[in-house]
Length: 234
Image 1 (tube, rainbow, N blue to C red):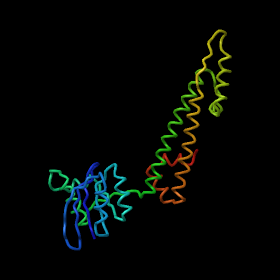
Image 2 (image 1 turned 120 degrees about the vertical axis):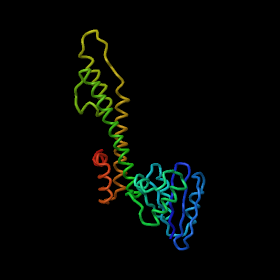
Image 3 (image 1 turned 90 degrees about the vertical axis):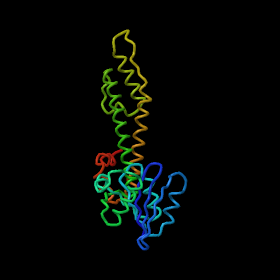
Image 4 (image 1 turned 180 degrees about the vertical axis):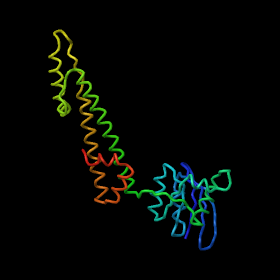
């Protein structure tokens, strides 16, 4: 079995590797450009367990380890730092410390979603942003209409042509000689319709990924409840 303590950064990583059968250890620095990282982890004797600190922008690394069949353990960065005896922080010492925690089964792991759940979360989060934009645009159009005495409620935004017709009708009820306050509402309504279609597309995609998996949907609902609330609406 091979254990790897990996101090992961955006452009490089420092690794400390232990072969549990022979007891040999070695260290190496890997640059993320090119294929050096993939070749290194491909050549390691299996099974392989890699320990890293919780950090952002590491989805590519999780995907690579999953594709190679390696196990990735993500540790709580604050707890890992609290276990360090030395105060001086270097990449080499961090990698050795992670490997030492793995070796003695003291690695403070945190839960990380599987790739399918992570993709579902990303879809739901993006759809939530689309719904927010849709609501902001809708409220803005309603405010403009109400300021011009065009109160039609939900009927206002059904079609761009009806909005323009209603706007002209409202303008005609004004005082004589008053210039008609016509505004180009058509483009805004078209943007609103586009947002609705995009939100419906991401709703369908998230449902396809979930595929009736209640555990995965429950995990997403637990971490991002507002997004899953919108998943059932289009």
